Image (cartoon, rainbow, N blue to C red; front, top):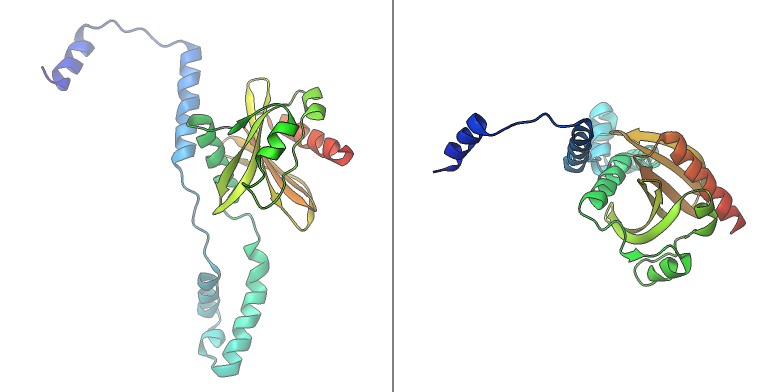
Length: 227
């Protein structure tokens, strides 16, 4: 008997019962996570492609020669460079990394609710020292679970894992030169909040309610200011 015969017999004779609401909800959640993990963020064009696009839009750039071409390229780089710092596919990449950590792990490589254990673990794994907070956030209902190093846009990045009720929050952070007020985004049902204190840039990612994630970000900033 082959697989087709067995399938036919099961369909004809096996008892079938409708799935309960809880099971259907779990299946839908897993399907959403699978779809999010399999989607690839769109490739962001590099500066060469952007310059080529400028040349197509402005024939003077492409037709100029010698010094004129050099000046045109310099001006083009000055125009394009500020845009290269934009988010581009970063939010999608953060969500995809968060989903992978939830599905196949690791959500954290060092498991501890104590920042004095988690923070030293990053030594030798990164070229910067991430900020790690525990107690003040725990008082607000956000428990530190641990930390990991995540490859993000080709660079090792610090990630802290927190939990509020049954929801997991990933907090990504890396060095930043400018401060920035909190900003809320959403990608494929996941909420993101980003901000910068002028030393580090932070991105919090979770499926928790957007207002709750903003509360996490506010609690973090308050605790960091008093740290």
